[in-house]
Amino acid sequence: MSVIIPAMNEAGTIAAVIAGARGVHPRCEVIVIVNGSADNTAEIAQRMGAKVITFPQPLGHDVGRSVGAEAASGEILLFTDGDMVIPAAELRPFVEAVSGGADVALNDYSGPVRSRIPHPVVLSKHTLNLMLGRPDLQGYSLTAVPHAISRKALSLLGSAILSRPPLAYARAVLDGLKVRAVHKVQVGKMNAVRRKDGGRDPLQEVILSDHLAAVAMLLERRGERAGYDDAGRRREMVR
Image 1 (cartoon, rainbow, N blue to C red):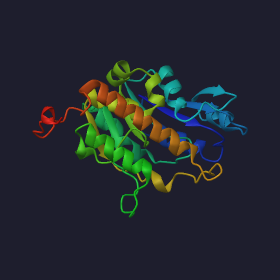
Image 2 (cartoon, rainbow, N blue to C red):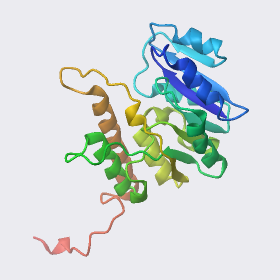
Image 3 (tube, rainbow, N blue to C red):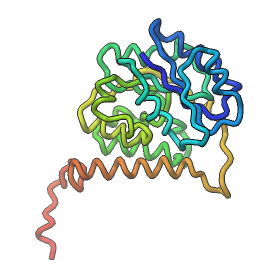
């Protein structure tokens, strides 16, 4: 199996992240995509025995997933991030789920859902699952790590689409892959707080844009009502 870890200036955590990944399976390649780093993340990852792919410039949100998937040789691909130290015991259920027949094994984590005003990203994930006919998946999505996919899923989806997780997720459901939420890892508490750009949140805007692209794909596949009927309305009678 392959563990794919994008990292940017993660010298403080990357050794522990790799150690956790290595404990998931006895035959495990660890691929670290170091992009735009000004510290010694790459050197630490190499000392830990990881396969390191280095880019001097930042690749942008989630592009490292596509790069790592393209380089991976495993039958199971597990994705996590270089700033999240997750023990092997918390990663193993995703690998076991794919080994047991799932094509996409999701983190059973929806984000904060008890707020009076839902966070736009949380709301978009719930909405997409409702439109896809998978309300059972609530706010689960490929936007949250850790998650794992099968080699079959990678072959069907292609590596490029993995840099737009909502789009990859929607296509996996639409194409009939076996998508399951398997284990909860509370990554919300692990995410570093990112500085906003003049009050804007560029990352949030990217994620919402990707969800809109996923909805557009859904409408293209299933029609303008996303496959739902019109509840008996006789619109032709309206003049």
